[in-house]
Length: 109
Length: 152
Image (cartoon, rainbow over all chains, first blue to last red):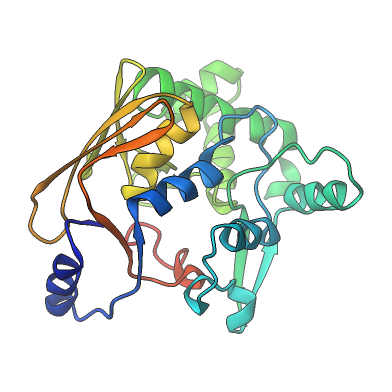
């Protein structure tokens, strides 16, 4: 959600009974958008593993618990077989095809 | 279900959806996808559901139509993105910036503040962000984003 200012966030949270979440500048969000969506049109897109998502967050210094993967919070995340295969190739130094979108099945324990 | 589907066709359909959206500003219907790949309507619908299950697109359960193929939105939102001679809807601030990131294009973004509806104008020119000062609020932690994707 986009807000004019921090005060506008507080004003929005109050009536919605929501706690303030995480706030990024537009500059940070642009960097995140480039990492997240930069190759989404690639013909060899095959999804993104949870490890790849975590790596993007780390790279952008998004290290607060807010950005933790579900597995850290009592949730098991299974990635698509194609994304797992991409990870295996990457670990072997092969071309992973730069898979993009998070492609996961979340199963709560 | 997935074991019945051709894996390469699943991703070909995904690519077709994104290309169609980019070129026409709207997602293909099940009938258009079925015609393009010369498959049955039922087969196309199952492929949409498979992509939904993999979080590659979001299919509205009420209408069976594509509601999101992030960063694109198939329904009007607060985020209008003008890029490459087209006008797209984005799902959120992140996705509004995601469209020029994905297309590698300059863009003009007309958005508004979620609290007071004040207009917020942004632009991407030569890979650089320009425009109003604003902040992006993520109300839900990452672990809960897929609990309710529309709210997120």
